[in-house]
Picture 1 (cartoon, rainbow, N blue to C red):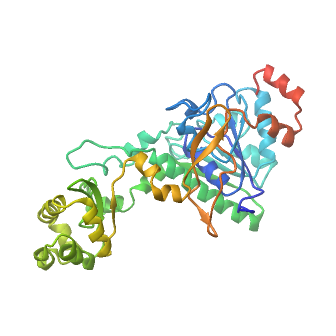
Picture 2 (picture 1 turned 45 degrees about the vertical axis):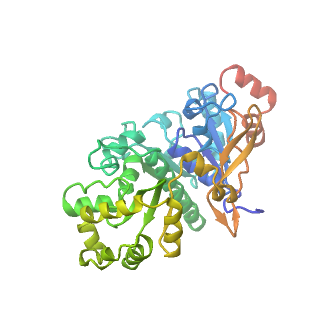
Picture 3 (picture 1 turned 180 degrees about the horizontal axis):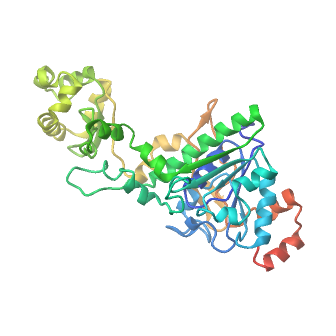
Length: 398
């Protein structure tokens, strides 16, 4: 791909862990130059989470830091703060998720940058509303999954509250943040002015509840939990076949009739007035679903998949994670790549999910080792030569 939409845009990513870095990665995927600032010794927290790759990376870190450079600065030191400020002056976007008030004490707050660069687009990610009483309260994905009601909609009715298998709140906050940054960049073309974007984990977590949240408001109580089933559509969920689990998604009344007649040979269910429409099937799910489960369990998965496909009913296998990552469709789509690594030799990195004009957006840079870009970035953008950098390093600045 010769040209990317955000080519020429430069981003200073002062954030760490997941939500802020996810935003930076999305911008990098679309072609922005992303400079990730990290502590010289520790780096991003996620460099120490999970399985080790080389000396400074983990799968967690790598999942959210492709298409970035790594520059090390100890931002507790005034010299490092000045370097970060000088970098910000040459950037279009700044992303930060410091504890409330910390970034202003470093001289890197929005109002401070806006005074010297009015067109800066500045994205602040926090746990809670920065204008409310919880502004200074640290926010974590797990906390917000609990407080936003997400744990109350996961799992089966008889189970205790259940979190998502991944940090869904962090990830969605990062996606929402990247959308806001793109909108601000678009508006800046017309106005010449920057924007302060404020994203809160709680706000984005509440948005994830979507139709479940609105049903709770309509009923003035929590909707029932259905686990792998759909709260509104029946049958639509995970079902055990004779030799393995599968997903069956009967999306409308015509599909249900074909499912009964052509897949499980139960014309009586298709003709039953209680099950003629989805509202009826939902109201009588306690009667219908056990019947369907018994019929599905009698048959091998391959046969069911063939019949379902022939009937035009969405269906699929339930795969293990490694099976999915190594599946033919993942390989054919180029979704999991192998990137060279200076110590490990190579490591796996997920590709961007976007295709533009038929081409998948490239991995221009593998997730960086700690400090990979320090020398080059500081030399090219700020004119700090090797001797000066050595002196800064000796003082713990870099």
